[in-house]
Amino acid sequence: MSYDRYESPLSQRYASEQMQYIFSPEKKFRTWRRLWIALAQTEKELGLNITQEQIDELISHKDDINFEVARAREKLVRHDVMSHVYAYGQQCPKAAGIIHLGATSCFVGDNTDIILMSEALQLVRKKLINVIAKLSQFADEYKALPTLGFTHFQPAQPTTVGKRATLWIQEFMMDLEDLDYVMGSLKLLGSKGTTGTQASFLELFHGDFEKVKKLDPMIAEKMGFDGCYPVSGQTYSRKVDTRVCNVLAGIAASAHKMSNDIRLLQHLKEVEEPFEKNQIGSSAMAYKRNPMRSERIASLSRYVMIDALNPAITSATQWFERTLDDSANKRISIAEGFLAIDGVLDLCINVTDGLKVYDKVITRHLMSELSFMATENIMMDGVEKGGNRQELHEKIRQLSMEAGKTVKEQGLDNNLLDLIAADPTFDLTLEELEKNMIPSNYVGCAPMQVDLFLEQVVKPVLDANKELLGVTAEINV
Image (cartoon, rainbow, N blue to C red; front, side):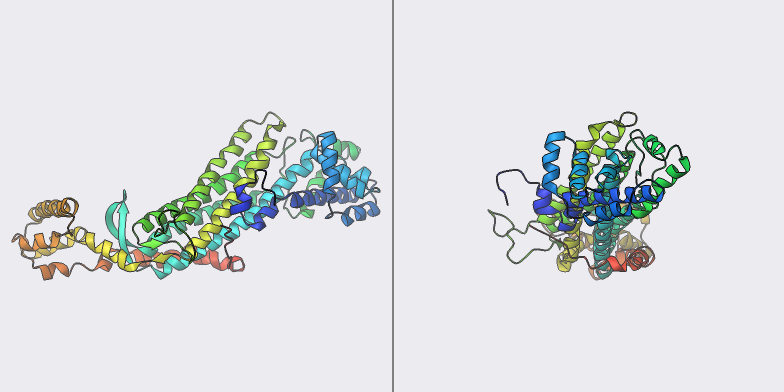
C-alpha cells in the first residue's frame, strides 16, 4: 500500500469490495472485450467476412487484459479506447483487424457504463431489501411499546416504537419502487455510430438497412439486455445517469432521515446504535458512546444527495449529438455515487441489526408527559361527575400551564394530576385520575397499523426476494 498519494476514503473506508469491483478497471475492460466479441459475433452472423477462428481468438483472451501495453499506448496516442483496441490486437493478431469494426468509442464506453450501473443497482437493491427486512423485524418486535411522539421535536400524542420504524420502512419501500422502475428501464446504447445514424454500419452492410436493424437487438441479447435505446446521438442520453443517481439520492435521503431520528433518540437515551466492546467513543471523554455510525450514514448520504446534481447538470449541458465535457465528471460522479450509497446501506444494515431499545427510559419519559395527553379523558370524566365541559377545558388549560412552569422553572416533576385532584371543579380523586395513566390507551391504532403494514405491504416484497436476504454488512472502520 502506498502512503504518499491521495486514496479515496470511499475505497479505503466505506464501500464494500463487491461494489468496488464493479467499478474497477478489470471489470470495465473485461466488459469492453465482451462487447467487442458480441459485436464481432453479430457482424459475422449478419454476413460480414469475419471467421470463427478470429472470434475464438478474441474469446481466448477476453479476461487476460494486458494493462501495461494499453497504458503505454495511451501515453502515446492519448485515447483510452484505441489503446485497448491496440492491446487486444497484440494478443489476437488474427482478429486485430476486425476489433471495434464500424464502432465508435461510445460503443464500449457507454454500453459498459449501462452494464456497470445495472449490476451496481442490483447490489444496491439487495442491500436495500435487507435494510427493509431488518427494520421490519424491529417494527414487529416493538409494535406495541408505547413511546412519546414528537411534533416539532416537542412532546406530542404517544405512538409506539414499532410504528415509528414503519415510517422509516415506508420511505425505503418508495425508494425500492423507484429503483425497480429505473433498473427495469435501462437499455444499452447499442451500435449507433458517431452521431447516432449508424452510417458506418449501413456502409459495412452495403446499404442493407434490414441487417443494420438487427444489429442492436442481437448485441443486446448477447449482453443480457432486452434492447437498446431506439434513438441517440453518439452517446445514450445523459438523462439516464440523472435518473439513476436520483434513485441513489432518494435512498440517501431516507437513510439520512432514519439516522437523524436514531441520533436524537440516542441523545434521549431511549434507543442506541450498536457499540462494540473495544470501541472508543471519544478521544477526550472516555465515558461517551457517540452514535458514530448513524452520523456516518448522514455524512455519506449528504454526499450522495449532492452528487445527483452532477449528472443533472451534465445532461442539461450536452451539445447536439455529442460533447466530451461529460466524460471526466461522469467517471467520478457515477462511480462515487454508487460507492457512497453502498457504504450507507452497509451501515444501515449494521445499525438496524443491532438497535438497542431502553424501554424503561422510554416509559419514564412518556409518563412524565402523559398527564398532558390524558387531559381530554380527564375532562370527560369530570363531565360525567356533573362538570361543565367548557369550564373544565379552561381549568385544564390553566393548570397545565402551572404544571409546565413547575417542570421548567423549578426542575420538579410534572404535578398536573395533583393540581387537578386538588381542584373541586373536577370532583376527581388522585386515584381516579391515575387510572387514566395507562400508556397503551393513548397509542391509538399504532400496533394494528404496524401489523397491517408489515403483512400487506412489506411481507409480499420480502417473500418475493427471499434469495436476497441474509446480507452481512461489511464495515471496515
